[in-house]
Amino acid sequence: MSLYSAIGSAISGLNASQAALDLVSRNIANANTAGYTRKTSVVADNIAGGEGIGVRVLAATRNVDNFLQAQIRTETGKSSKLDVYDSFLSRVNGMFGAPDSQTSMAASVTAMISKLQAVATSPDDPAARQTFLNSATNLASQLNSMTQQLQGMRLEAEQSISTAVSIANTQLKTIADLNNQIAQRQATNVSVADLQDQRDAAVDKLSTLMDIKSVARGDGTIAVFTGGGQLLLDKQPVTLSFDEHTSIDATSSYNLDPTKRTVGTITLQNGTTSVDLIASGAFRSGAISGYLDMRDKVLPQAQAQLDELAGQLATSMSQETLPGTAVTSGAATGFGVDTSALLSGNFVNLTYTDTPGGTEHKITFVKVMDPSTLPLANTATANPNDTVVGVNFNQPIAGIVADMQAALPASVVVSNPSGNVIDFVDDGVAGTSDVNAVSATVTSTALTDSGTGLPLFVDGIGQKAYSGNLDNPPQVTGFAGRIMVNSAVLADDTSLVVYSTSPQTSIGDDTRPNDLLARLGDTSRQYSSLTGIGSATTPFSGSVDSFARRIVAVQAAAAQSASDNSTAQSTVSDALKQRFDSETGVNIDNEMSNLITFQNAYAANARVITTVKQLFDVLLSIGR
Image (cartoon, helix red, strand yellow):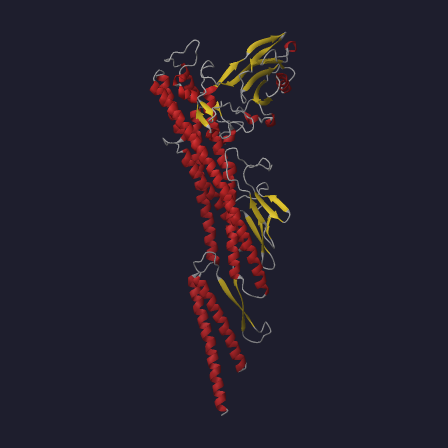
């Protein structure tokens, strides 16, 4: 090796050592920088490159476990979704109250019942009657307030979705910009490791919002897809849009039909192609998925529980059953019922038996005034053992009879003998059916002379009777936000006792208070499975008081479960991140060791240069 070759080799070594020292210094300086990965200096010998002896510095690299990184993003998306659940459900639980709290919604129901007990004990005591009405008013106000809070939380979720979509668009643009820079630099053998860190940070942020997967391309760029396979970014990012709604109430809901949708949806726009990502099921994890669940599932179900409770409070106290009257038509026998008192949502109940065989059938004809809601689902009533038939009463009686007959076998005959009376009789001599019972379930609207029930609770400022009508929208939807104490009862508290004017009920008569007390606290009722409590085949059955307590217990359990799941998922995510950091992050001890090594290498190369210089000096002195 000539002296010129030696000095060239040493200088290349100095350059390589200096580059390595700079890289180690940067590693140490960024040891605590989030998202920074350890960079490694890369050198190659010039001989292999055909450039003579010495070394040349190549682009710095990083060592990242892509599979582990993908796992972290998957688990982070799950954590983000569960964090949303934990945050919202803890607030819902605080709103409903703890099961043993005296300020819970269930405690308010129990308190009202206890005040009604005092009225039953002393019906002639004005103070007891007023105390009960105050308790009922407080309960109605509490249900109103809880509804406002739930709908406010749904609106908050709507706004959070809008914010998240905006952030997602920003991150997609950032990834696209970094993709372009990486592709350009990689083509000229310039290090792209820092740019890759920045891109990973953007992808990581995106993964907290929605479930995604990235695919590496040969030019150093990546493509990004949703977990369901929708392309979000290749050469250019798609645009996500969200038509945010500024107001939401209990009737607001997502629907695949855009004309029926009353909340925002997320649309992917790629050129001329437009895709509703919510309809396509693109969001399975991430904060956006959590917010969508809150807006469209979890909070509406909590609202459904409040609405069902409010509806049962109203109907349990105001509903009356009118038994049918026995009728005959030749050899045929059965029952007739007057439908004049039916409000929309009230029932005509028919029970008949096939003979021989003894198979019993229970048919519930539901009065409907909006035919667009027909046919009704069998879950329109909570009874799993009946068959629900919605009947359009917004037509002449002949049409009503015809619709009822169409839902029954020929062995049960429906007719209209007069007025609004409808008869149901068997097939007489043929003997293939027996009509066992017919009745009407109606809502009392008068304070007296309509039975011992009382329309204590009504719908809204207009004081509309609550009959649970199934017209569009169903009356139960959002009823907890509209329930009020009947102003006529507030104006005359003796109506809590007086139920008849002929003969006149004595003010000391405890018949009505005791009946109302039994309806609320003792009578077992069935509740809609749409509340998430019970199922369509096995609905929750119990008193109104027990249903209120079950709601509170369910919400408390849901909040605890959300907290536990969030904590457990965070543990998984944190463990993966720690593993990733240990593999790709900066280890100060190792870097300090590398620093000494490269300093020694630098010194060694400097020593070679010094030695060559001395040799040159010797050679020059010989020539003098």
